[in-house]
Amino acid sequence: MKKSVIIPYIYNYYLFEYLIKLSIQLQAKGFSVKVLTADQAVFDKFRDIDIQVSYLPFIIRLLLRRSGNILFRISLWISGYFWMILIRDRYDFAIIPWDNKPIWYLILKNFPSLTVHNTTGLMDLDFEIESYKSNKSHKIAKFFEGIFKKNLLPRLGNVILKHNKLWYLDKLLGLKSENLVQGFSGIDYMTVTGNKMKETLEKGGISKLGTKIFPVGNPAYDGFLSYAINFDEKKKREFKESIGLRNDKDLYSMFLSPSSFNKAQIEEIALVVDSILKFDCEAGIAMKFHPKTEKQFLTEFQRILSERTSNYKIISGFTGDKLNLDIILSSKCILQKQSTVGFIAMITSVPIISYNLMETNYYDDMYKYIKASWHCESLKEISNSLEALNNDHQLEKLRDLQARACDNFCLRNDSAAESITEVILGHFKGIR
Image 1 (cartoon, rainbow, N blue to C red):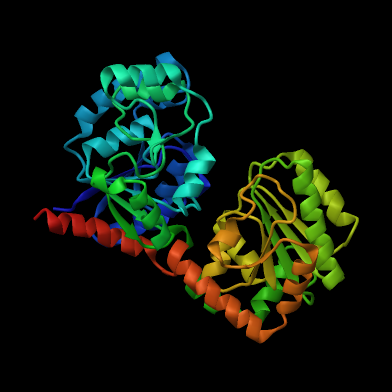
Image 2: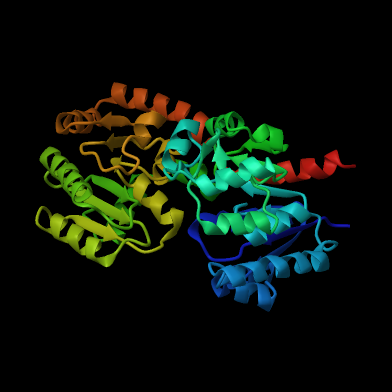
């Protein structure tokens, strides 16, 4: 009899797109896959590829939409417990996109479960703590901790993390997670993109929770390596032309992840653009923005580019990693501050120039830490790095850096979905 896997892909989110490939892979390996959602877009995607999909119960969908309200959240937990009783015998395994929301948590507590890490999070324990530590005193919560001799506050490395009032409500209603960092729910299995992420989780104390960690790469990038091998000069020219850029000029791309920009961020990006055009006045420049970037900032960067060159392209909205891959492979280099998109350049050996010219308090030194780029902290260093793009020896050294960075942060695996499937198969072999 086929083993049945449930995937609660509750809402449409670009970070969960890998679940489509993973579902196909699981079905090909003989699993019966059932996707549950509250989102019409998700429903349509899986129906179109013949993966079994259905909607979550109406009451669950209704309460999810209002789960920020205390009364509705209580009702969601209660309804969730009753729903688990009804479905407990229907599935053998669950894949949980994240493990820090009530319904996902209830499912992972009722089925053998796996969660997939596929972001830049968990690169370094100190960085995680510094980014999410709370600056409040939490005197009342600490008072009750002393009385009941039980941790109420979310902690990582014994440091209290940011949270809101819903954390305490969820704890009261059954949440036993140590914090809201992915993996610390007590889930059975977790796959991560690289070896450093596993190291961070282990330093954070995940081992005592019994979770087994497997570095597999990023399933969102499955097939990218083989695609890159066949992406020749002709395809580069065709792609540049397809987005309205001159196909005979080098392309320099910037992926900008903030949804809003402060004055320092805008000024810094303008300085980078000026550096590119000083190096190559006819260069093509592509700026790819986060889907949630506010329109006023798109207008501002349109102004900045149009005043400097006619050979530019601004790309916004959700376009998926396939377009990101095409942009990267068509580029002479990408110039990057932060974001997972740089990982695509790492695994496909496209040069990265990272920069921290001005303190923006937005992951300023991410790629300096990763050591997968020529990291620049002055305009002179950017100029030197652009010059180095024409130096084969320097490029070879950068490729070596990127290879080491991939081992640490994003393994070069052309089918992480297959590796994840092997983890699940291993679970069933282990219980025979």
